[in-house]
Image: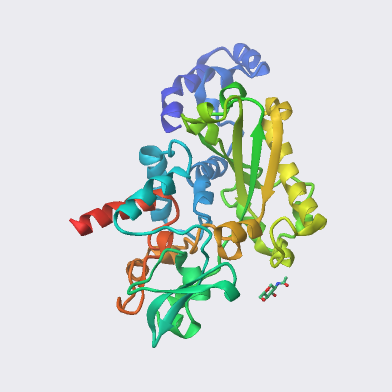
Length: 386
Ligand SMILES: *[C@@H]1O[C@H](CO)[C@@H](O)[C@H](O)[C@H]1NC(C)=O
């Protein structure tokens, strides 16, 4: 933009030296602005242009869920680099990750259990002895092991799995923080991504030009404030376009996933009801928000309208149910500024201070949310083992 102004200074000179009657005529048709970028920002103050730049540089904060005013520049720099250099999509979808890794675990003498909820980490005098596993307490079994490694995240591990008196002895205990929760929408289309012009890209759509507009939803916004009004922002990703194996597996179909933020409190009254049994009021509420977002998408991409075959809407309680994400917070620990200080970085490490008590590998909470941190960990691990 700086270059455009300076390269186009001839536009400024022309308007200054051409006969006034001619310039007046040009002005009548708005030609100077059209002919020279020197006038491209006419009508916009420096502050307005800088605010647009702020949005462009910080808009992707939703990827880790902490507002620009609360996170560290380091976090944003990691995300920018991720998208420019290393972002990737697993061919076949995310189910490929367990599918490929389970044989590795089994080759090393391990076993993998499905639908085996860990109810508790068993402890004795502050030492981990094993895990209690089962669907309900009445039919659970104890499995005794020498080392327990929890990758359920810091919150599940400290708040649910360990007895509180053991959790409290950890230096991580004071870090248990407030979290953000999400709402998700899945839409299925009757045409291929290619036909619909859906590309392998991630989009963030905002109704507000400030980089923190979507974050205002956590400042006491009530359901009445958002229902039947434009939702302040959301993310769109199209797996079908990203996955080269999609067309073979689901010929003639495509999907998009839409993600946004929503306070847990909007849905908390249904938190203890089981999935698909939360009643009409819950369903019509979540579908009203979903439909509103669909309307906004169709406004931007009108050709999608007739191709929608199916959509389903999830809420923070959906995340809590399927992902065991406390308060629906799928990103784990908050990515606040403090998390990037040397002290905190050193605290959030795999393993407890006293490794004999509990070895904690707390998944994403050790590094930061997302796939990049998993790559990072696998690199560390390799170096460590070498
Ligand atoms: C759900 O259950 C928990 C634990 O029993 C309780 O603390 C919470 O208040 C319940 N929520 C509602 C909305 O009833």
